[in-house]
Image (cartoon, rainbow, N blue to C red; front, side):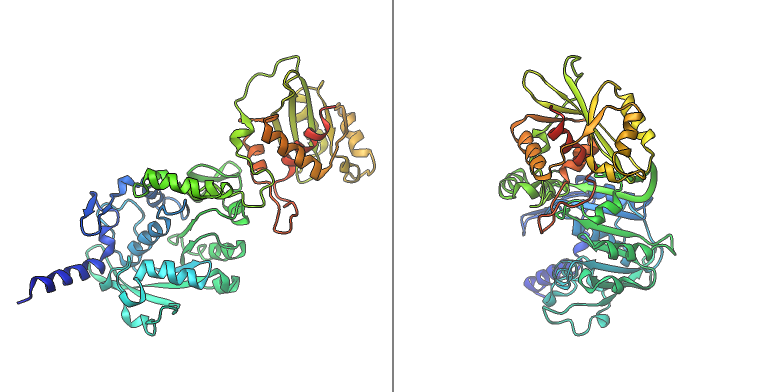
Length: 468
């Protein structure tokens, strides 16, 4: 006979070794021993959306604010696929048979201390992670009894929909610090935790091409600002949760944004503390999953201070425009000045690519041929004719333009100070311009990053030159 203490210890051990049963239960479960509530999947609408999207999209991004559980969400799905033990309320994709996965993070230490511990438990309690103890092939985990041991590969028992063992899934762990070449190889399902370098992302995407059943999950908090990785996934700029489009056409990618306000385990009190403690530059990223502006943000001012609701410009207000011209992109911003307050409003903008001047000129003419403007004076050397030819070409097309004041630092200061005191406003409808101004940054050496800078440059020219 076993005494009650022995039985309780055995029950506790079995519970630890089958933790995944507590995650996303069909109904909320309160654990009186730990004073913790395990919430059902319906209480996590963004996680549910992320799982459901797997039925239709092969590449998914879970942009999770800090402490929202993005790593656990992804781990939960990977374990379901690797074991075949899908919960009764599962809404996502169901894979047939064992699967092979690459699981990667920024460093070996991150992978070991976060992802491996989340999946298989700490060193002294293997089998207490999300993978049930009875599914772990312990023979594939030899020499892993030290805290600093990086596990390369483990095997996981897989069961079919009838509960019969039908083979082993394989989980291989990698880190970005190993470099691009370590991500070359055979087709694999992939889970990347935190933002990968663009070259590693490209290699991982190549692993999916030969098998339509392969999937990639990326979980991250966008603390690096508008990175090349985000630019690859979101060519049209930042967006709300939903399918990702390219040139108006749907892709095989889907974005889910999970904020601290979308999860029940983060209380309003905790959110208030987080809001107070986080630096303003990273607050949106850590609380809402919005890309961080970082310390290099050129205009680190909340857009609520410099955007406004659109309104009809009074007829007597002065209007002008400013152009940044080039072959790859030509950008134009239109402004109006309130004669009483001297507040400058940017009410319209345009950006066109790889188009002859006649096309850009037509866009300007349609907004009012009587409006005067300034043009990037460097255009003098960009046209095939050289010298004043390009400016003269725009003039011949009906535009009344003069050379813009291109002072960089003085212009940046003028825009920044105008934003700060409320003397410069941008209409809320100008979403691309607002996005580019928010993500206008300097690198670690203080140089302006030449990325999506055409509209911000035209905007600066207008502020510096158009008030004459």
